[in-house]
Length: 242
Ligand code: ADE
Image (cartoon, rainbow, N blue to C red):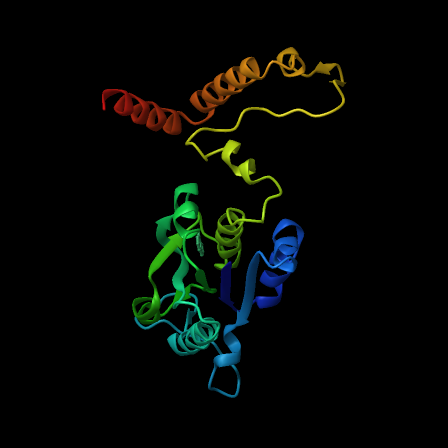
């Protein structure tokens, strides 16, 4: 059963998201475990300050190494006390490796993850060197903090855990699972604002429906994401050569 810990300056915000909807239900039923921790609780100064001016100058503040380090050490201890291995530690930064479904599948294999969120301009590099197994960015844009990124990673990894989705095959049809975008979906009514559901989906002929969905999936990917389409085609041509 996977456990995910988040070290952050906004633990209530993070926990609230993780306790809602599908992940919240899975946690209540004991299929996953999530814990958010306040980095500020580990400061050693009376003002509980967690950041300071950057050496070398420049704008913004940098998070101190010490409270992040002590918070993570405490989390590692709690995880190990549960009889688990030391968690796989990921720092959320815009300078990390780009996240994808492939990364989610790889991370889903760990028994526990510790996601560390920076805020302000960044974190003292030395705490990253000391603790990080990897650094992950969720995309080529800058957020005000790592919290939303950590929630994205937690969500996409936890939904792959047994017991989280009601139908285990649920995720295999989704966009990006096989490197392609998902085919279009329809539900009742059969006609809405003059638009009809494609006839073939009402036919009950599963062979034809599968074929139509595969074609739609390929065509969508070719038009919307030529980068994914090319990668998919290269992969398939390679497989044929093998
Ligand atoms: N922190 C700030 N921007 C980020 C991003 N794009 N991904 C992960 N963490 C971040």
